[in-house]
Length: 166
Image (tube, rainbow, N blue to C red; front, top):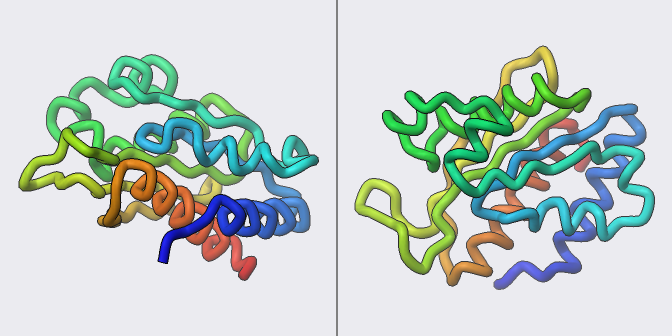
């Protein structure tokens, strides 16, 4: 069953309520989702109370310049890797006052996949400032839009789980 934008908005609203209750602020670094997470969040009136920013770092140069991802990491592991999303999250902590961060990089397709990194592969990194961050990969089915929607849904679910909000 396909996830709808309304389902995403409902999850984002739950996340916002949880962040407000816990007096926490969120920042994101998006690559393959192209700002879709930020769009879903900012569809919610009052989200500025808990959402700091989203950096859409689509190119490797943006990942390096805006988030401090090292050139060596990108060369050795690629943009779609646990190492890269970890460095993206660390960049958010360095450059924002956010208490919670999430970073997303993946291959939404239809091209760009390989045997080792197929279309639908998405890496996420998320966590709270000063605590251990979580890194996990997911493989989503569907076309480009569906992969991106499912990635946003997974991000929201991971954050709700982290904050024990569901």
